[in-house]
Length: 139
Image (cartoon, rainbow, N blue to C red):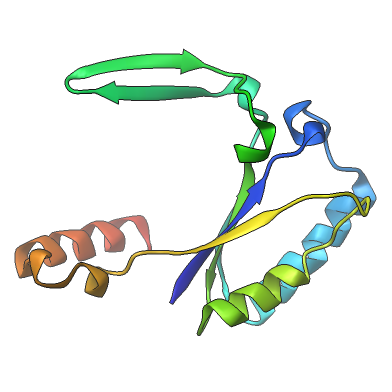
């Protein structure tokens, strides 16, 4: 089953502070372990929210709000998409993420929906269309 490990933003990530060479190397080693174990499906870091935007929906209306966004602790700085056997395994992997400065940070782990999770409402035609789209994007 797939889990997303959501790296919460910090004051540094929101300020656009980039990792050092040593930090990049340490994170690269961790990512290599994930790949070697066959559990890493995807993973990326995100720029600060000041370079992003949100699209809000209200009926047919769409409103674009440019960043930065308040509440840094609620923002996302990156993610890993992991294919593991259980949330316990996902937690064990996330516990191994380097914590460079020893400061406070947080990674949230959420299970990704699978086709089976939607039950009978996800009709065979829709499942086939979804499978075709995933095949086209290589996932």
